[in-house]
Amino acid sequence: MKKVAAKMMILLLLAFFASGSITHAAGPASNNISAVVKEIDGAKSEILVQAYSLSSKDIANALVDAHKRGVRTQIVLDKSAISLGTSIADYTHNMGIPTYIDSEHDIAENKIIVVDKETVITDSFNFARAAGEKGAQNLLILRSHELAQMYIDDWNKHRKHSAAYAGKQ
Image 1 (cartoon, rainbow, N blue to C red):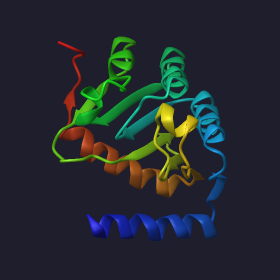
Image 2 (cartoon, one colour; image 1 turned 180 degrees about the vertical axis):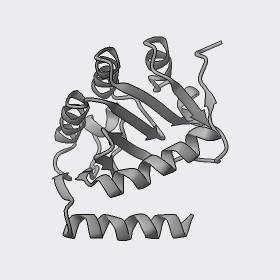
Image 3 (cartoon, rainbow, N blue to C red; image 1 turned 135 degrees about the vertical axis):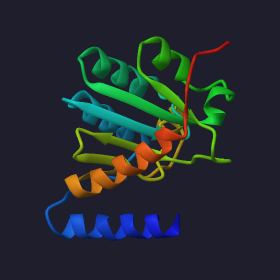
Image 4 (cartoon, rainbow, N blue to C red; image 1 turned 90 degrees about the vertical axis):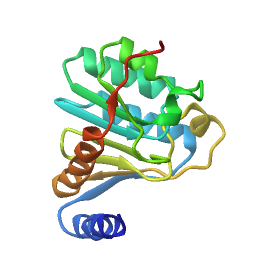
């Protein structure tokens, strides 16, 4: 795991100093949610989400809108997302977005969205309502095909050991 994280950090730095770019870094928390929604709204082909928490209605609505536009959208959430009562897993599942639960790890503390195999949204920012209202969170939006591919590979690894969410039973 440490090797993967180190490799991602090295690639992040290489992407930034080579051909990649950072389009958003930190800022007021409410601006972070707007920045994430803007990226999702601009998606053309694919959105992959890997998150510990997804309770921001603005982000969830943007994901549903993208899905309705024909953008292939899939979500992998931590197992706590379905028991916290703040998850929008039921909403995304009921709207037809394939939603999965990563129960292999004690805590799947991921905060990643990959858009169109080119844009990576990540950092300490939680995709949660409280992060936009009360939090002091950091957010990075990076554009690098190479970096996005590393995150896609990691997303696929987690997706393989995650179970499809079937909604509240």
